[in-house]
Image 1 (cartoon, rainbow, N blue to C red):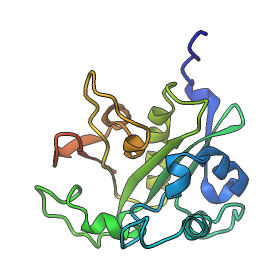
Image 2 (cartoon, one colour; image 1 turned 120 degrees about the vertical axis):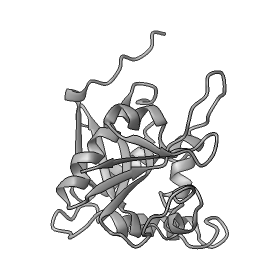
Image 3 (cartoon, rainbow, N blue to C red; image 1 turned 120 degrees about the horizontal axis):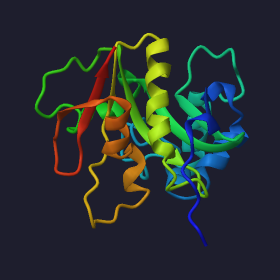
Image 4 (tube, rainbow, N blue to C red; image 1 turned 135 degrees about the horizontal axis):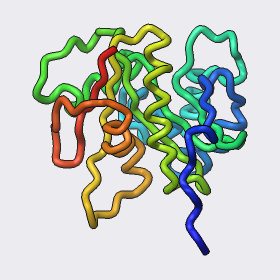
Length: 205
């Protein structure tokens, strides 16, 4: 079987999650790693699996995204459609919206930064629906976060992606933060490298 072709920019439409249906978002998440987490890793203050149930995490995501409510004052990310089919999700909000990100060492190692600065937004999770993976969609989603954050008043946008290494397999569960290359090509620059496999990247508006 031949590989599916790369997804072209003109095939992708992204909308704030509150303008997408809940059914579309859940189709993207499916039942794999993202389906279990429901994008709550950086939202829950305690240990995610111990301190919440699947039903609670699902309800939290539904509340945070406000799916199906175009008049909602805020939402927690973007839903991507490829040729009209729900295909991807990217979480992008003010950095202050992520309590657990505040206590993680990755964003803060090697720099002094105001953790309460709501003008700095963060990209924390990317999900590509099965059937659309391996076709460059994460690169397009990374680009989409820039205009979204800037249009909503952000003065800077950060990401905390994975550094992929040749010959080393990375699972989709690990790669939920996105690959470094996707943000680099979108115009983010590396500001710190807290671990061998994680980097902090940023774009200032």
